[in-house]
Length: 214
Image 1 (cartoon, one colour):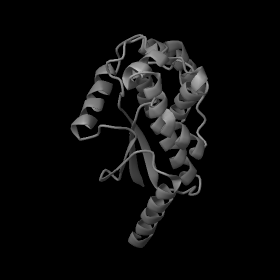
Image 2 (cartoon, helix red, strand yellow; image 1 turned 30 degrees about the vertical axis):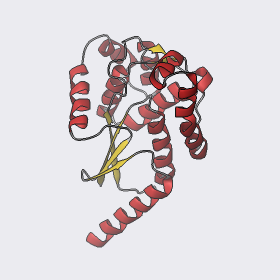
Image 3 (spheres, helix red, strand yellow; image 1 turned 45 degrees about the horizontal axis):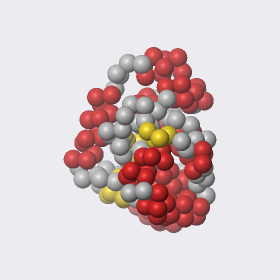
Image 4 (cartoon, one colour; image 1 turned 90 degrees about the vertical axis):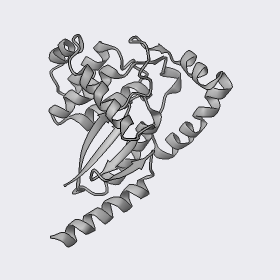
């Protein structure tokens, strides 16, 4: 097996598009060689714990409504091309994602990481839910057949907060400054929401190399 580390944030539209494109390639290879692990990166590490009004946040970040619309035009275009649904009207809050990252970490312990990442993307981009809210995260945990009561208890504590922040800091120290960033076999960094065709090529080449080595 070949490790595929994915550094992302569940409120990052390019991460959502990138996973959608990766999944399109993976479905073509039921015996693909990847073992996937998700790693934390907060786009907004200084976001208040309760999040912010999304409209106000984006207009502040991009210098007004026109700037926000212009900045998101490529997102709309690439999301449509990938078939990644984004319900902009439903998205009211830009959350702090530290707790969502904790949930992803705990899901990894139970082998449900990619499923939980999918559920977080859907909750935020399609359903417009606040994935900084503990009840929403517990509901996602329940859907993923995790122990929602235990997740609620952990969320109420500071369990793994320091670890998530340290891993985020480690990625930045290694040179990651945007997400998604995919690291193939702990050697090759692939930044951005790559098209399915690129992943199809990579997977084909890796499988040919593995076959030749046998």
